[in-house]
Amino acid sequence: MLLEMKDVSVNYGKVSAVRDISLSVPDGAIVTIIGGNGAGKTTSLRAMSGMVPLRKGEIHFDGQRIDGLSSDKIVARGIAHVPEGRRIFPDMTVEENLRTGAFLRRDHDKVARDLDGVFDRFPRLRERRRQLAKTMSGGEQQMLAIGRALMSAPRLLLMDEPSMGLAPVIVEEIARIIEDINAQGVPVVLVEQNAELALELASHAYVLETGNMALEGPADELHDNEHVRAAYLGI
Image 1 (cartoon, rainbow, N blue to C red):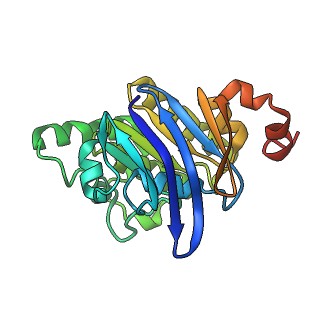
Image 2: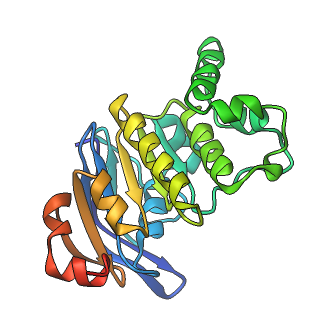
């Protein structure tokens, strides 16, 4: 397994956010975590990327234990995080935002190549490379956030609510982008409020409810699960 969480619990102060959750991410896969608001989905991603400390449990990446490492060291290991709300730098240009994604890299000759690769993947970003990020549409900003993460040359991409607040036609484009990134060899952990979309994209799924792991299994099987259909698919 590329990434494994083992019996992980996280608290915010005295409040328990996730309790004893375990999950695995195979190399090459898209794995999704679905659940309602406050279920612990974002906390799980933040734990993987070193943004919150664990109360208990372990996280291993490529056979190495990474819980307890700082976020920058986890990025250096190959885990990139596209956060909820995009968190771009609004007063920096598109190109400046993208280059921040590569700030830990030392292979400077390849950074320029990867920047061209991001512009090839997102032609609109190339067109707006000198434009301030805050002047872009929501969909363009989401593409920028994904592109910035790709600039770290990740071995695993964590994505938190990439479709949030976007028009349906843009959501479809983001879905194609996720599939394309995965097809080019980058595994993805996808947290997504749009459960239908998440289960369509993923090969394996986990369902969190109030901080507990309620269900897990192949995504197509969970799509047909009566509880999932009633609670998350509106069926």
